[in-house]
Image (cartoon, rainbow, N blue to C red):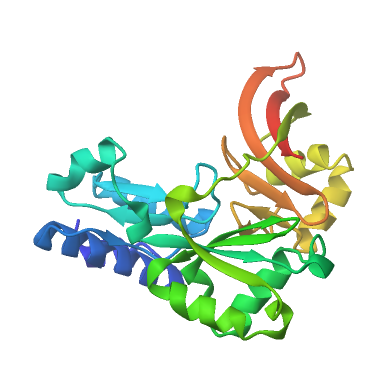
Length: 269
């Protein structure tokens, strides 16, 4: 399958551009025996690109976002001669990304949220795809950024009034320490794997109210806005309901006597 055949299957122009860039990187990696990597991808984008690589049977790649459960990741493609380095986890990810650590002054600790940090990055004119996850803490935040954009972001943030009294530090991605998010498992009973059925149960409301929530553009699956209740979800999908939280779809445990499904769901606490 050639590049144009792959692109012709896509209807969204942004998706075509994203896939085209990936295919170019794969070709560059293959021909020149060099490592290439994408910008940061959200879950939907990553799944799209992984599907394409599966179709063309390309396996020399790894997804990485700085830590195990990162939501935003890059895809790194590597030549066959470097396969063992990645297989043995000996690749230095600090050549691709690093951390900008912000420590707030005492009067702002515990006040700033994810929005304050992301808003600052956008204000200095940096594209969102150059930024990975933003890990907020009481005392500040760690911003995972592409190494190529780190200096620009760091210098820009230092100039913003909101961070004028803050301290900044650049640290290697290998030195990042993140507490894994806590979850609790719940079982729900649903007639099908439709998103409206699942939303109804996880936020404990009626099917009609769940449909209304979807129409109000408050429901996302793998960071993609969902507008139709008929959307089918699958195991490992991440469902976000604005104002209600984030949930990971687990396995179907069994069926009830009435033919309904018993589904395990992880709720992020």
